[in-house]
Image (cartoon, rainbow, N blue to C red; front, top):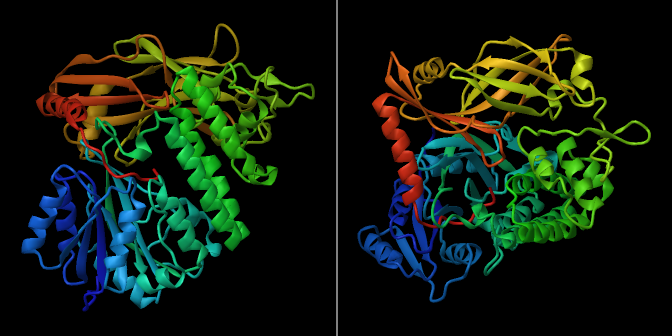
Length: 543
């Protein structure tokens, strides 16, 4: 990595009631080295001692400037704008008080920005799930290290990266185009800021370095605004922010506006739908907000989305009230999607959602087998096996010759799956579809995890892979039934004891925690204890 010789970056850190973590964030910014001219920390009228922590740090670090707001802004936009106003370096970066910049992040971004004369430089970001420490890449595959994107319209998919914190900005460029964050209590302010940046058509330089670690504390007593999906006001704010971003992008380039609307259908809408609160009052309010939000979409916008997004949009627009099978719709919004029976057809024989809501599922007859929203249910069959039922989907799997099924275990921190042994499918005794009893060798899976470097507690997503006689295959997320869930304590010749905890994810799919030996059991206890004790509010993000 080439080092930039001059002090050219201002890192803006925003903080509210984060005395316990803001020091780590500020230290990670100062540790970037001489490329950082200054760190501007904006204390948004904290009441917990955050201001005192920052002042104490500033007393020993001349590059740290502290801005104390007299009144809390209610959001992240205003303090970031204040930080930009106090900045003196030609480039600016943003950092939230509960996150960190990895070593060399600023240097890598500045080097790329100056080499390619790019007003914006972007690098890799990971969402680090705490307390587990699992890293999940943000928008994987969107960027290629070393590339230069001449203008956003050449890559409409850039609208999917709504973060401001994994980027470096030329301050002259921001000032020239009057680009600032929305002020006040504006949730998902990143959506609007990013839209304004892309609408100004900057050249964008891409680095392969990790430049931002976003800490996600889902189990905190007070989670971030973006993760607080139990409040329908959160969804309303997200819809409004999306509308404004799509408007800004559409006025700049129709391709970007359309891409933003498709992103809403394929990403934002399924996230909230699959985690939908069962309370009838919440669902009614959510339904009203969502239908109002979909009015700005044309049929062409909806048709441009993938099957999951466009079918959901049409279903939501078809009825005045939530349908009776709302849980089925929420399950369909999962990743991968899963469409539970019954499978209804219209008068012309085309696949439709249901007899009550005959919305056509266009493309079902020609969709590749690998993309079919196949539904699989799983229940305990014995100490070391599970029985699955694979539902046929409008005869598509029967036509392909559904043949075998096997379990696939995906490590939740990334990596290649661990595959079970294939088992022949048998016709279900009642109704369409097939059944099979699949071996569940947890001891062998724990050994595989250890060999791959998974220490302590191991977390796996469970999938069922169905292979067909015509060579095609499809992967489905099984839905647990009966007594499949619940912790098990198993003897192990290798580890002495093996704790196994099958559980249901937020979207209703089967997942598994394994804790081999004393080390694994301790990690499982720490994980549960950490989730119970975590009790702080990270800053809002659009994730």
